Structure formats: C-alpha cells, structure tokens
Image (cartoon, rainbow, N blue to C red):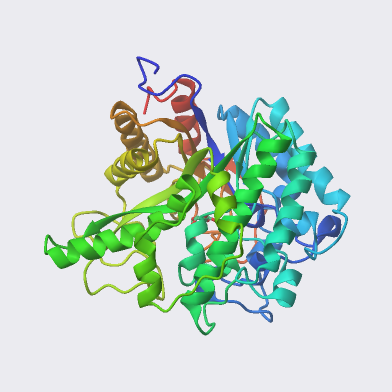
Length: 468
Ligand code: BG6
C-alpha cells in the first residue's frame, strides 16, 4: 500500500455507467429496442409500450458525444471506466447468426479512444438491456434458450475486444433476478407474473450457467482479462437484538449472498435448499450444469453499494415496496437521501470486510454515489458539497477496510456524468461530477458542466486517495 494515502499503488479510480442509461440513439446503427427502452419511468413506473416519452431513447446522447465525455474523465484523472455493451446493438433481435458490424465498430472506437486517454475499460456484459425481440419471443431468463443467445453475444464481444477490455462483469447485480420489481431488468421477468419466485430462481440458475460459461470463454480467449461477479450489496442490520430479528437479518443476508456464493464458490450453498422447499421453488437443472458452475468460478467480486437496510422478523421478501425503497425498515440512526436511501458509509466498510472474509477474493466497488437534485447557480457553478461529503465518507470507509486487510482493487463511482436513473427514469436524480443540462422530459441543451465535485475527485485521484 501507498504509505501516505492508505490505498494500494495502482488502485483503479474512475466511474461507471450503463449503455442504456447514457447512450440514447436507441434505434441508430441497426440497433433495435432493448428491455430498457420500454420503461417510461424506470422500473418503478412499470412496463409500457404506449407511453409518450421514454428517457433511454435519447438519454444523454453519449453515443454521439462520448469522445468529449471521455476527455472530461481523463481530465478528472480516471484510470478506469466501466460501461456496458448494449446487447441490442450487437444482436438487434438477439437471434441473428451474424453480429451487427455497426454496433461492434461503435464500441471498438469507444474503447480505443479510452485506451488512448490512458483509461482501462471494465465491461458489464448484461446491464439491464436485453434485446426486446428475444423477450417477446422467448419470455424471460427462466427459459433456458437465453443461455445460448447470451453466449453467442459473449463470444462475439470477447473475441472482438480482446486486449481492449481488462475486466468483464457477466451480469449486473445478478441477485436482482430475484428481487421485485427489478427482476424485469435483471432477468426479463415481468413482476406481475404468476409463480414469480419459481420463475426468478429458475432464471437465476440459467444466469449462473451462462455466467460460468462466459467466464470460461473469457479465460480461453483472453487470458489477460478477468471475469467478475457483480452483485447489489446492501448491508443488513437486524431491527432489534431480539433473536427473531437477528435470524431474519441472517436470512436476508443469505438471500443476497446466495448469488455470489454460487459464482465464487462454485456450488449451491446448503442453506438455500430449505428456502426453496418452503417456497415451493423447484429449480430444473440439466446434467452437467453443476459441473460447469463448479469449474468456472469468477476471478473477483464486484458490487454496487449505495445503502444499508434494516430487517425485522415481520419483514417479507421479496419486498414489494411501491415507491422509493427496497430496503425494508427505516434506520433511525442514519440520514437519508432525497430519494429515501439510507446514507451509511460505515456499512461499506462492513460490506468489504464481510465479502473478503467470505471469499478471500479481490474486491471492486463498481457503483456507489449520491442521487441528488443539483442547482445551477446564476454564475453557472454547481456547488454539490453534499456529494463530496457522501463520496469522501465512503472513500474513507474503503481506506479503513483496506487497513482491516481487505484486498480492494478499485472504485468506480456511479454516474460520473449525469445519466437517466434506472429506478425512476429521472434525469433530475443526478449522481455526476459532470452536470448534463437535460430535464426529466429530455428537454435542454445537453451541455456538460463540471460541478464542484469534479475538481475534488480529480484531486482525490491525483493523490491516490490521500486528500479525501
Ligand atoms: C444500480 C444499477 O442498481 O443502481 C444502476 O446497476 C442504477 O443501473 C443505480 O442506475 C442507481 O439507481 P437509480 O435508480 O438511482 O438509477
């Protein structure tokens, strides 16, 4: 470790986005709609094919403006950038025998540009943007047919971008395949389906097999690249020290860990059997599936961390909460964001320690940040000190975790440039250190403006985390 800053030398610092939340150009270059393109107000707004406005269709036009945006990332000293490859750009219906060259070229240009800016690329292979035509024809990931379509996509992009992509994440927040209402994003399961849990866990199984085979493909084609799991981590606390609450919290934790347990250890953990039995879930496996999962484990664990949550014995999963919260009960000791998300930097330290104790694998924080409303002052400045405070506190927590002995390799803040919110579809839920002049209806100039946090983050990176 770097003695002064406490972060390892060569630590990765940067930002993360997803293609559908940033690129726009949703029918350009041969692309067809993806599952993200029928969400008119994020996943909380449900799926609608007749809405007047869909925020992903234009998003922030990263598709046309990425060169300029990458320059800003370079100016902020980023040495890593995480984005996703929109599957429907490469296989517009998901079923083509040949990939769409136009889409492949777009990402090649983007990656080459980043490389020439000194920025390493991390790719989420599937980030909530499955070709809609596939879903219309085959349903969701509980249909085994998805494995082959996905692997065709994986083989194509890993071959094409060999040497250009260093880290591959097989599925964004894979555990959300079993969370309402995000199961649509993660596994193309309509939250209104019958036998929802059965469908969600069957889908998860197919994603485990697909992820393991993707890992195999990555290792074979590009031995220098690494394959990672990507889970949504919310540190869980019991509501009281009543044993029932503690047990409920343990159960909730296991439901989150189930996914990384399978991907990192290579087998279904014993505890899940009882949960399956009690919920009448019967996961159909084919011969060889377990062997595939055992043989091709991930190289590292990455995760998103925004908040912690509180669980009591009365709490039911999956949490069918309607508005701003998927996190269970209110924690009276912690503040919240304007969108009701608990702010808990110490929870990140606990998360890092827990994950490292459990897997002894390199870790990567690939999403973290504050969704907030920003105000552009008369002089054009944006004084987002609240964001600096949030990010700084979480970085200090990472530093503590590293001092605790955790092998943490990097940090990509979420949405370094303002993008469309996945949950709500809003532009006004901003995460960026770079402001984008667009409102919730896509109106505005699209102009990029550096916020106060821009200079702050640039300095954090320049000092490798010494000046937080
Ligand atoms: C993560 C997703 O769950 O949270 C991102 O991977 C998403 O796609 C991020 O944008 C923040 O959530 P939201 O709803 O504020 O955009």
